[in-house]
Image (tube, rainbow, N blue to C red; front, top):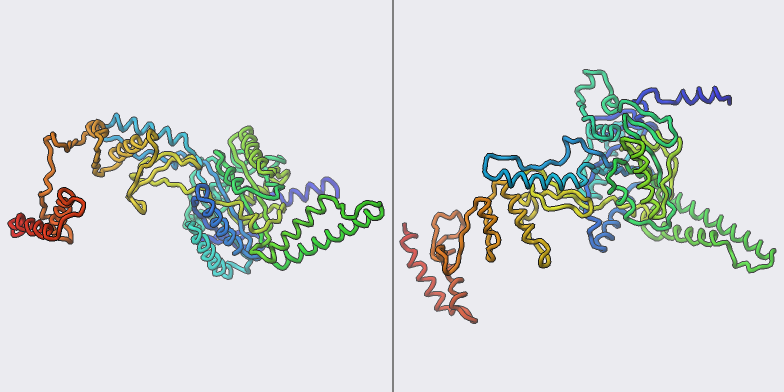
Length: 556
């Protein structure tokens, strides 16, 4: 074929607009997306759970549960795991929730706000991390695909719930918002879309999410809008993988998308293929032994690679036949995005270093940058034909969980930095399962300082009442500075507590008189009861006297 004809054929298949690069046919309002080839997909967004800080037993249980989730998908149900690190817009950055007020404490408020701003600036709150699972199945039309996808969605959400993972399905607008964020890196342009606008404007869904331009003319990089990008794939060379590989990549302070396209191989077909490979290895062994006999050396001496392949194939066949293992075909891609080409190369180099540490390699998708980018979109479309055979255990080691964030809005208080994700911890105790708290630590570790910091935060951010019981008197100066009242209880102080005081207007199911009698019985038992406590006759006398003392109040 002549060079001119080749160029003509290439131009014929080249996308003429940014919209044509986006590889889906239709997006429906209920979240079902139609892809080329009659594949219909849906997407779930799921939250994180505490894996990195869990005990070894809990980590084993989580990996076992995650393996069961992977084994749910059969050969007719390909799925995609997407991990999107996106630079948030300034309007969406986590902000300090302590506004200035007309009082005498704005100087304290200003100092505390500056401290919080500094902690937020040091954290990774500029990077928003999202996790999605996209699954699809072939169907003749959307009417046929809808009930089947609904059943799969319910099963997947149930499997995740058993792991303690909260998830939610994305509708059509949510999926378009995800795609818009992936194709507008840097978070500069807000997503504006409503289904009612389509008939008014005559625009399609792709027009609302497409960037200004794509540029895939270079072999190792591409441009999306004003941003630079690079698509790479992970070459897995290690015989055993670590559960920290994926976590370390996702912890980077960089804009990137990690994608795992997973296709389950039919179990019978996988076993048949492995048996064929074992037969081929046996035939190669026989040929090597024949060569050894002809050359006159020991026929038991075989090439090391042949011995290794034979052992690995036998173990793989045993796993597929006797253990709850499936065979998967995995495509692992990483798409880095950065505002400058130099920053992009630095980010790619960092990811490559992490992969190298775990005996893997990050290879650039030369002349396949467009296919790599569109395959990273949370659509379930895979245009990369680089696959690696993996068992269930090997695939599950890419554990998608690290640590659960605790970052609430509203009257949330600052509790420090998450040691794993490096994000600020902001929580409202009243919204948690238990509002109680306790500071534990060795002497000099900062327990009192943390308590005083929380006290100031409660004072500045809420209208809650604060009561401090302080035997050592170390909180008195702080309470006086905040305009509080200090009540000193001591033998030589002017303040006293009357144990006989009774309030008849208490809104409680129990009688105030009965409660006071029980209290005075307990008090007398502590004071004069001794080792054996009060005798029954003494308890009777005290109870009778209490009722006589408060008889007039009870009658009134």
